[in-house]
Length: 596
Image (cartoon, rainbow, N blue to C red):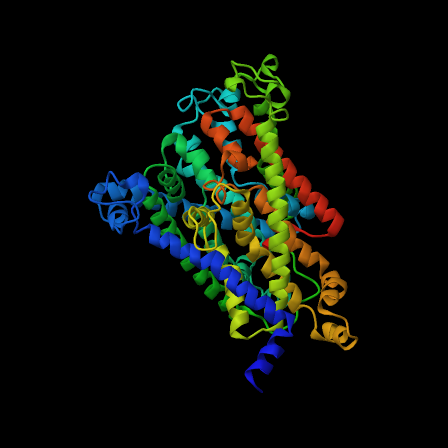
């Protein structure tokens, strides 16, 4: 067969065209910007010319590498201390997430604890809500007069002043991030426990093994890969977290890599920030490659026999009721109480004064007063905040539509050409943005799209760059969901459509998508929810005209206008939870399926 015939045959198959287009597009949107940020670590920037002697803008330099990595006390202050803080927080976060998530998974799947459905639903809520929701709640509760001069709810109620180490820094950052990532452990470990062959435990019981021996010899080895995978996922996510350290670390100058990177990129040393972003990317990629090896190792933990129909449940006996109510109370404190604090803090005029006479709706519906936040109107009458709300919603819809649609096409093409090098390449490219920390990816796009590159215009300052980076960043969620959905479909279904002369578009719209509607819609839902609550990805790229609610909340918090920040936070959380609830009820799509 000649070259033209092979080319015609190749082009006649839609999945081949999809793979080629995606390969080219993803190379342009991931690897080219990555090369740009590498070049920027060796380039003199306009704000650095005065400090680098004999240099000019755009000239080659090793200044950033030397200052960040090899310059003694300067390097310790700029890089090594924030790196050490980041690593310590990440280990503590993993310990809390795995302990809490693992215990909850065991209680739900292997015991007779009460309220299983309610507890399970509540436990996933901290992940659905923005990570900094609990951070703001922590500040509302434990803010002390030593930092900012205003006591929090804990001090007002008890009369005790919280020390700085408890209100800010390492401990609260670790606790808040641990609670946020605990659903990772709950879903991954719980999935294995739920589907684990109960015959193994029943056999051990027949041999008179104790409950602790069963857990140590059978249960823990079975869930070990999930624990390791959770550790790596939570560690990587914690390493790249920005919002929580910014809210809880900045007041006491406790810096981590992401907050330090933000300071340098917003200041006079952008080269430092680009280098830190590159290091974060290398760490993230290394961790995720290690995670892939852990996932592959799970093959050695499969069991031969089928799953028993009667799963053995550990009888909590007299602990059943106390433990059920205790876990319910804990989850209410994590999910509901923070929302109450946001509402309370958004209505008090004088911070720290919780008397009824101090409550007002000025921060919600007020026209603005010169003695309150420089005359800033309430958020429901504030044109800039309403503009930010519209931007957030439009951005989330656009990113979800693009990522979800491209994800479906990618999943279809990858599965139909499975095993081919082009299919493998596109599969890896669609997953690659997940390896990039959000703040680092923002730095990559800032570096690449600040200036035009041939036919590619300078997009910085436009709404298009936010849509572009959001769509690329959330593509892995949609593509993995679509791949899993397509693998569940037998090839005979589409073959029957082809034999009846049904075109590719009709086969997709009339056959494939309707059959796997729920899975595909989950691929749209997770990007939408993620985009609505995203801060780190957009913080380096927004301008006043393209601001979204999350970046506006951060700016209000930096100004010390906490009432506005709490009100905006409540608005964001309300939109996220309401959207998730409505979409789930209308379509059956679920965010926890996307996480899994």
